[in-house]
Image (cartoon, rainbow, N blue to C red):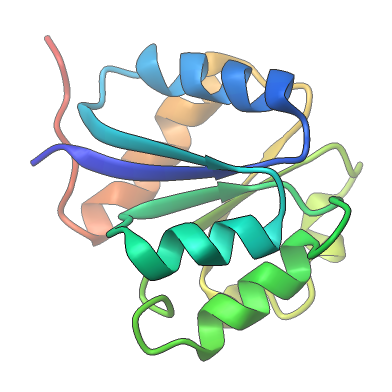
Length: 134
């Protein structure tokens, strides 16, 4: 089954690089949504099925921590794994109640495509969505 992905970052350049990194992982993606902040991400989540969310923490409007908390409160979104992408030196300490709110993994900026492959391999088996390309 192909993956439905949401990338949330206020930088369109970072979103494009994350898209490229995911495409290099060999995971089949059917739909790739983008959002510039947490408010836009919630709109996407309200109207589209998503299997995994990659989100920055520091964004104008609604930041990543607030998005993660809102997703944890939502009946239809609390089950969606979140991967935090951040430039913070110790990103785990910057996520408020992260593990309780659906954060499954962390990727530190700057990142390499290999970082996404290892995260996807660790997170996706939990939801049964792994589809490796040969």
